[in-house]
Image 1 (cartoon, rainbow, N blue to C red):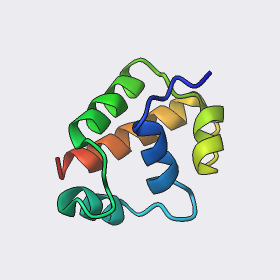
Image 2 (tube, rainbow, N blue to C red):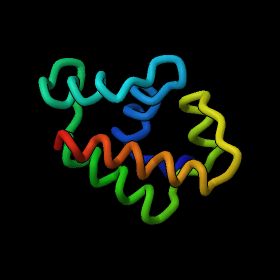
Image 3 (tube, rainbow, N blue to C red):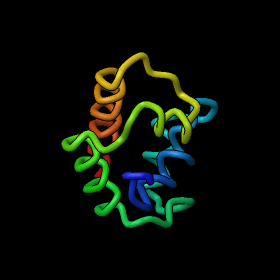
Image 4 (cartoon, helix red, strand yellow):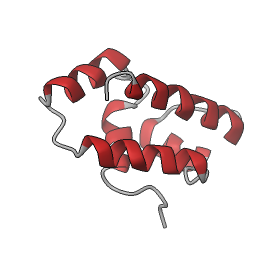
Length: 90
């Protein structure tokens, strides 16, 4: 069973997929609200919780995004970077 809660799971799948990830797109969607019908604060809280408690495994993240990570540590570093990018706009 997935430990990734909604809407975080859907946001990762939609915005972090290896073929379409662009930090500017997610920033713009959050700022304008266009194409981002999610509670931004809930998303940010869920992402922070997922990082702090290591709730996302590499396998689960790879299944959602098709992005490959060599280790859980690499994934954690990436999630921290993603959180920082998102925090710049919220």
